[in-house]
Length: 412
Image (cartoon, rainbow, N blue to C red; front, top):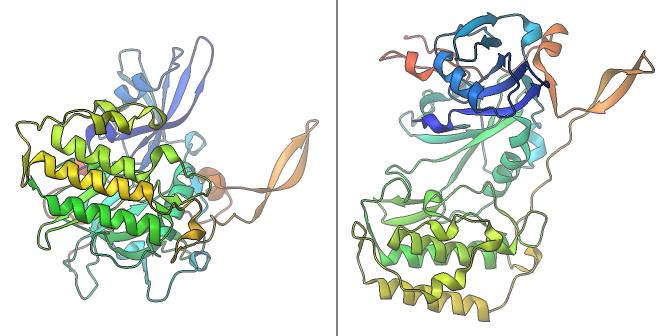
């Protein structure tokens, strides 16, 4: 279930001195952009989000803008397409992924939503597949800010060899209009992350599995995960395995985006310290200021609610021996030094689009690379656009089923 505190995001706004102020707010639940206008000058989007939250589930699906009073009362709504600030994102063609052999693509229209796990992440199934009850995680994007992240995560993950301690990649997901990449699915592991489910007895074998998979990523594949934390670790209870996932910060070692301050040795040590002590204060600062020596040298006090299958000293011994071995061993400074390094194509650029601009007050034609385009402009040109909007979760009735297109599944 999407957490209430994660539901809204304001990508942009128009603020005038003395007012009015308009904030363009994305509702991840309905996957729609609503503009909130208030008469006063607001440098923060927080009041606009607070007021939108009161009305979002009750305004019509075709409302693009609301105007509210300083107290948050609804003054008016607009369904005028000129007030629609939604942008349609460029989605790369499937062939640009240069997908490995055996990797299938599936249309978004074939996925049924089962739950809304978080912003841009859903639990789904494929009702028309041979294994229609199999649950998968669908990760997607329709905002320009997420394009590069999802492209690189998808292209990295799809190339990782199968590994018992890595959540498995499933399929590339394409849109139902032109067959362009909109996201991907991966294996669903029930039971929640180590951050969400803290009731388990944490096992020493899971730590040894974790350091082994980190060595595989770093030393064999040339990949730095860069976000090792309890929230990105799952336990496959049937296999009794720890599994790592979420590669949206992962990079090729030595390439742009790689940061030594986010190195995975430090990530593992911080993670186990947090699991044992439930003290998250030492990582609540910028990565550059996180001091792993402080953790290695201090006493670890096991939290009274934490259950371990071995004494804390055994976990620390494994960490100490592994970290010393890694620090003494061969260092990978660039990913191509790894024996089986993986590579993937950069984010494809959109084709040039004819755009009308004004020079000295006169219209002119210019060809620009547009990563996103106003939806109202595309509709005005008679073009078909990809719809992401869906009904509010709170309005779904028992038995309602919807596809990832936002359409209801009609009972046979």
